Amino acid sequence: MSAGRTEARSLLGRRADDGLDPASVNPTYPAPAAEPGVWQPTPPTFTPAQQAGTRFARPFLLDRADRYRPGPPPALTSARYRADLAEVRAYGAADSTVRTPAQTDTATFWLGSSLTIYTGILRAALARSTRPIAERVTLVALFHVALVDTQIATSDTKYAYLRWRPVTAIRAGDDPTWTPLHTTPAHPDYPSGHNTYAGAAEGVLTALVGPRARQPYTVTSPSQPGVTRTYTDWRGPTRENGDARVWSGIHTRTADEVGVRLGRDVAAHTVRNAYRLFG
Image (cartoon, rainbow, N blue to C red):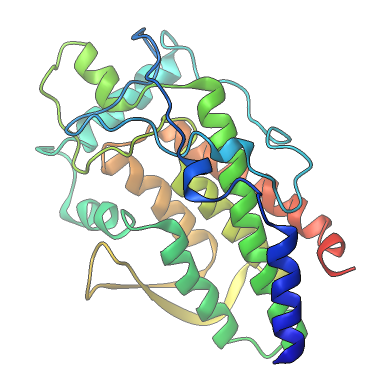
């Protein structure tokens, strides 16, 4: 207990003023001038941009926030973007006639915090592990380090490109009353933060546990109380998380896919540099 408290105090001292306090994460961020493709506050509350300051926080293992920044999102005139927007418009509308009840359930389940849901997945991996305690502690540490560094990398990419959300794009077209199934979060579309977390969690679990769970595991969600979902690997939740953000009407498919890749890149970096935490 004494050794643990000493290490905790040391860590907190090293992380003082790291830019991850609430005020630093959410500074005042004026809305950009309204232009096609550029993020604007979204209905119904038109909340100012959130998490714009996270990109300036001090990572644990990344040397800089833009280390794995992906290339820009598809051009507004590209076939890919038109397909992305058409998919969200059809499947993500509050009154969609093509989204199935099962898809709506998936969207609602994964609406909850990715970090919260993936903490349940991490606990399931630990509960079924027969590895030594030191290896399990390493898994916990690297899992959370990867997710924090991923938050920083996500904020960097979102605010580098400032891509507008589907609701803004669709309403700027020929459907000014279009409404998504779920309320759009107050930050840019590209990439999806839920999916950067998914990619990072999947990457660390795959590297340290293997691609599949020892046994099927069940997780819950704060956004769908009383409902559980069961998986046998770490990639299944990632696939559902990507689908969910489209079916919620709050992200494009490209933003989800790029988010997963960014999270996996940060996870791989975390595992490669783990020695820096434990030296």
